[in-house]
Length: 412
Image (cartoon, rainbow, N blue to C red):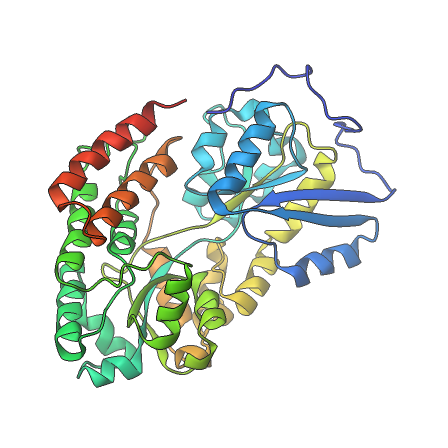
């Protein structure tokens, strides 16, 4: 949790803090873990010649820690980007942020999915952040590798192979037996996807930690263990050089893919264009990812920062971004838009990707997120990593994971 210095004791040099709009040159400093889409930033700057957007992008966890440190010192950028699984750690101290209700944020509340909007609201009602995308999930798979294994390749037929995670693992066993190759990138990827489908994950609605007793967590862990034990996992961490190579050379044949991951597949394995397809996720519904844009309390230009966020995350811009990058909108009014439902990409064999992701998101209703969820998640992923690497038995790693999670939950 952020240790906040009393309001008024620390104010950044040169900060207006007034919320007034200036006609002079303004630079909005944005800190985050993923770059804002450059064409949209340039479009906004063209529409507002006195505004310049300057981004500082760091690694995922490090970027959040940098923002936490700045806020604890009464500092911060004009705009911060916070991932959904970190957001509760920030909303726990709303005094560190500009309450976006003061700029009329409640007027745009109805544009967004209820559970996405509520994730950016503190217990006292402060609107801390505005939602960006939503990480609806599907399974990307290699049609050429499936064909070689004697498996169907049509998206409907492939989706029918795995209505459940047990069926997905069974399909993986058939693939490995037929080819001798790996089916998935890691056991923890299955754990993350399955646990993200649950109505309850690490924390309940009252803020009580339930990871040690929640059946959904134990079951999701077991799915990961079962996949590892069956020899399905290539044990390659997401976005590592080995992961990039596995996408390109057929080292894995399926990938649990939130909508935003499709661009990564295209970038890391361009020579595989037309060899991929997309099927439904086991259990269909789910979310992995998404973020919020926030305005710290001591932002130099809070009003201008909010106006940029409001424009960038408006339905029109979310639709435009989806068309270009497949980042799935958090705006339910777009889920009947033909540009979304009919979205296809020749790289993915013109699979009905838009409708698959719409179905995934529409069937999902979110789960409570607590301030320690990201730290706890890291321990569960580390634990399955130890099993994947053969360093520990599943039972021993489970017990260590619970101990490590308890330690992390007590920190701070």
